[in-house]
Amino acid sequence: MPGRYTITRDDVAHVAELARLELSEAELDMFTEQLGAVLGHAADVAALDLAGVPPTSHALALTNVLRPDEPRPCLDRTEVLVAAPSVEDDRFRVPSIMGEAP
Image (cartoon, rainbow, N blue to C red):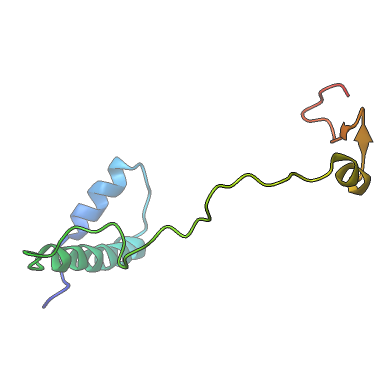
């Protein structure tokens, strides 16, 4: 059956032991089934004939949508500082970080 891969309960128990995980009997059964399905899907993908399919980094062709980098006038410092919640020495005042002295 496609999508199925043979992994034994002993394989799962061995991997759990290597990872220092304690699994119950029910978890061993559940993970054996789930890992078998995951490995089966990986085997299905590996079996695909991809000859002639160019490698891609994205499913769709992408184009750069950034605007040109052109100089523009900056914001007026006084206007910006008027809107700030706290100002000190003509700069934004921010809360101290990690106990630094103000």
